Length: 214
Image 1 (cartoon, rainbow, N blue to C red):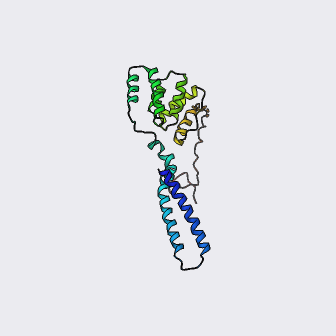
Image 2: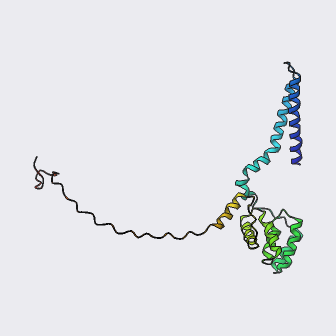
Image 3: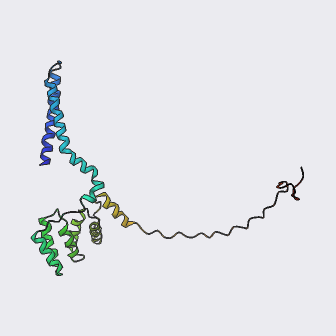
C-alpha cells in the first residue's frame, strides 16, 4: 500500500510541476491567482511525498548502523508445523526434522527458524545442508551467518558479500592469521660510563682547597 501511495503522490507532484510551469509560461501577466494556487498544490504534494518517502530513505541511511539490532532479532510465529518440527527434533529424529524444515521454509521463507533448525539437523556434507546454509546466510544474525559460512566453505561455495556490512566485517576476521612472534634482537650491554672528573675551576666554598684563586 505504501508503495502505491509513493507512486501516486510522486506522479501527482510531477504532473503538478508540469502544469504550473506551462501555466506560468502561458499567462505571464501579474495579479493572476491561479499560478499561486498551482504552487500551493505542489507544495502540499511535496509534503505528502516527504511523508511517504521518509521511512524508505531513513531505513536506507540507518540500516548499516541499526541493521544488526532491528533485523538480527525476530519474533517467531509459532504454528503447527513448527511445533511438530520441535517435537521431532527433541526426540532425536534429525532427518525427519530436516525434511519438515524444508516444508516450513517453503511456507515461511521470510523466517529463519526452520532454516536454522534444518541446518543443524541435516546430514553433514549433504545437498540439503548446503541449501539450508544458503538460506541462513541471507539473514542478519551474526552467529548463524558464521555457521552457514563455514558450512558453505566446506561445500566449496563462497557466499560473500553479505548485504549487512557488519556481518562482512565479522567474516573478514576469520581470514586473519596469527602473526608470529617477532625475533628478539640481542643488544650488547652498554659500557660503563666514564668517571666524572671535577673541574678545578669551579669554586663551591671559600675554603675549598681544590679551587684556584681569582
